[in-house]
Structure formats: C-alpha cells, structure tokens
Amino acid sequence: MKQSEINQASSAELQEKLAETRQAYSDLKMAHTISPLENPIQLRAHRKTIARIATELTKRDEQ
Image (cartoon, rainbow, N blue to C red; front, side, top):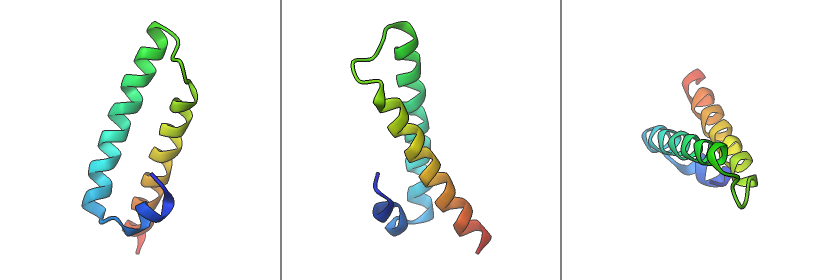
C-alpha cells in the first residue's frame, strides 16, 4: 500500500487494512518458518506497510 493511498483512506479503512496486513504477515512468517518462501522480501514489504499504517493512525489520533 502506497503512502498516498494511506493518506487518502479513512481511519476505519486503515484499521481494517492494518488488521488484514498483520494477519497476512503472520501467515507469511509461519509459512517461511515451515519452508523457505520463494520471495522472502514479502516479509519486509508487509512489515513496512504495517509501520506506515500504524504511523498514520497515530498521527491522526494526536490531532
């Protein structure tokens, strides 16, 4: 998810997307533990997306 998409989304949408992304990251991490992923860079991409969304939600809460 790009930063511009995150900025345009509502807080409710971001909460939903954050939950989905965390679940997907957890699933990928478990799959990688069992057998190596073909593209382990996906793990990094999910972590960064989670951080972007969480940061935006924190920024909105402070305002």
